[in-house]
Amino acid sequence: MADLKAQFAQAQKDVKSLTKRPSNEDLLALYSLFKQGSEGDATGSRPGMLDMVGRAKFDAWAKLKGTAQDAAMKQYIAKVKALLG
Image 1 (cartoon, rainbow, N blue to C red):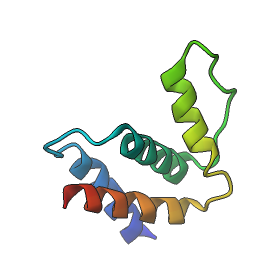
Image 2 (tube, helix red, strand yellow; image 1 turned 30 degrees about the vertical axis):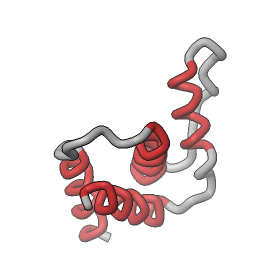
Image 3 (cartoon, rainbow, N blue to C red; image 1 turned 120 degrees about the vertical axis):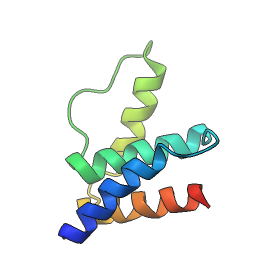
Image 4 (cartoon, rainbow, N blue to C red; image 1 turned 90 degrees about the vertical axis):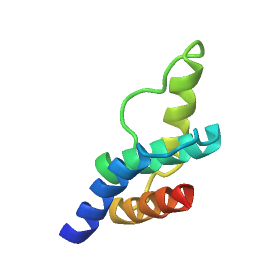
């Protein structure tokens, strides 16, 4: 478990070194996997209609409801590795 958390922390650092901006779809995937891996299921209320970015981020995170934090961490690490090439 400690090794997974270390890899997750390293992936958070690695994602900042991407040379080109990921697509919006990839950014939402990274955000939702990060939130699920670090906090668990989505909490709070869904942002209002005028906050389209916040709403999209919340919806992407909420779709992962029930995904184990360990599984989300592994998916996040894999996604970062795929984006790094």
